[in-house]
Length: 452
Image (cartoon, rainbow, N blue to C red; front, side):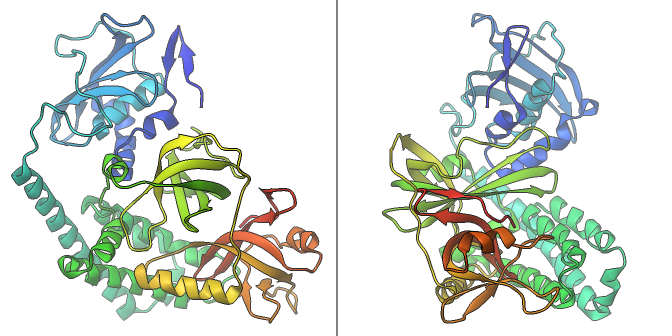
């Protein structure tokens, strides 16, 4: 995405700002701080001693305390930042919010105050090299967060018991009102992942094609209870499962820590992408398949509505790159490391419905809270046998899986197949299979047939 030039100054876009966040929690925390109500003495000015187009941003952010923030942006994603808040994340949420205000043209030109000097510590690439880490302070912060999460999850468990005890029929009346209070409490308890699950529960009732919402809701509530129980025994869990539980709760994982881990070099084919709205952020999932490693990987990016999502990796593209995986037993999410040009054509596996079911069972063993799994099915689209019935993809032996196609019907998929088995990429989940792309080996590139 190109920078916007204003009066000769190259200003970052919102997407470029959010891409520098050390984790998703910082990204979400920065958004409410863009408001002018929490800022004073904010402004921008040419950076002393640098190129004329380089700017210095500063401001005081008022919250539980007043923090002095200074940011010196360079070509994205390079920046230096300093803030008087106690956070060791770099850039912190206050620096991100100041950059977002700059991207939104909310910083007036002004002479910088005496305290707004050019920061020297590089942001977004780990801690200040001059700062000696304090293990005791880090352990104290971790213990404080754990105590907050524990207290919040105890409240959640009591709320879950109340829902089951009172019966689920009441959920048909204003389901969003039932979850908003407890979801906000989870945010306060530093468990944003749980808050996201809670805010997604009313959607189970909004799907008019699914009359079995009570069973699905009860299953979702049971999954939250299992997460509470798992967190109580977090220290006794195997490392991969413990990492999965922390991820589902919403503990942050710094990008620098992920990139510091081992990378897996391969030719990665981008087979499909899905855009969705998660809370106040738009998200994009890009699924990659590794030719040599025979493994899946997921690129996940976020943007505020209207700012535009990351388009640096497009469906049909092949990346010769090292991917670095986030921790977790069944975690697909990765960050891209070193990349090189390649002329390779897209490559993909294919499975039967029975194979996919077995792999889904294995993923649930590693991560009981999984909601999706990438799959390429070689199967035949099957029309419903009655009006209003469900479409399926079926193996030649008749084993089938329900197609999830939203309000439409997958007639284009049936037409493209001609009644024969075809390779269809999509996401497998508890309710069925959502088709995303028809993979055409003759064309050498995936092409869109049906969207979930």
